[in-house]
Image (cartoon, rainbow, N blue to C red; front, side, top):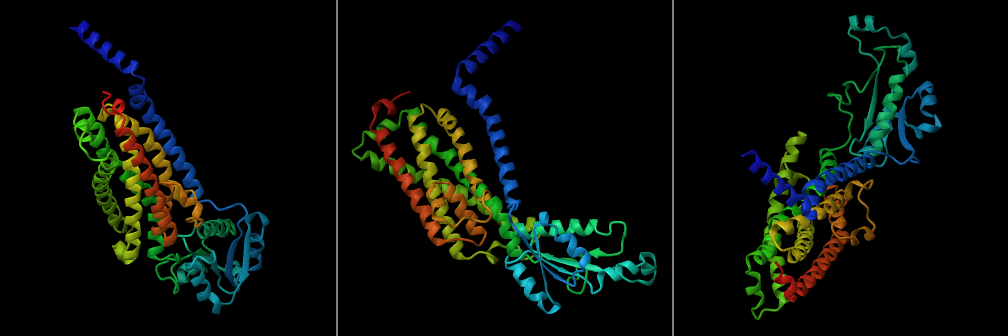
Length: 403
């Protein structure tokens, strides 16, 4: 019995190892995909939350003591301090909210004198609060958040031996709950969706196409029914286009349902009071999103259809699609590669990458209708090219009837 088991095992191992394609897709490719995926994620995430080395942080300050101004003026910190009056506070806060500047610091008058004479124990007995430094920032903007972190570190190091002599962003009349983040719910929501949704959208669309496209052509080829369709008087180009459009409809439906579930869950995950994306995005935004999704689906379906036409079986067609998944994943990360969504039209001339950038722009409130229309036009053109290729393949009996 053991010999029989060993014989069967040996036969299976020989079959697998002798099939280079099967060995690569089953053993090598999964690890390779994970390595490349996580490498790209690490690279893009680092770029997303980094600031250019030449960037100068714009900090506005009220009652800033000379001692702290001197520390913050070190050239390597790249901080430009602008002194303002208390009457200008609301105006600067508005600029921070609108991403026009980085940080606002509000010190109590005579800050150095106050903390020099402040006795924490005596103040606690008398119910006196420690002097509070207000730091207003917009955490939906990378530069503002980075400026906040740099200044916080400086202030924590300043007077580090004077424990409890001052506080940073404690609850105050200006911020009763200690919330000094000037980013709106819409800003925070857009920041998260602008990062996550493009990748999810691209992957969901590709997965939906991958689950249907191989069966439509490679499946019929494997069962021998594709030939009977091709002998009809119908034009091969019409058959190819019909196959692609039919699969695209179901693939798009699958992708839309999946991504809709993810997007609708986002407000609850982020703890937003509004709880609905319809509070932030218009009908036009969703129409543009559907246009991008539809054109992207056509690209994936037409490409996978061509690969399926060359495959001898559904299993082989699925194996062909695995390396494409890696390219799709990297393209889905395109929105993370830029500080904000690029507006130059050249970025929207590359299929799938343009889809990721367009989706990111829509959810980040930076959408350009021209760029979205360019994306759709490019993707449809690429899909038409693949359709012509598929029609040519259908005209080749050697490929169609190769099993």
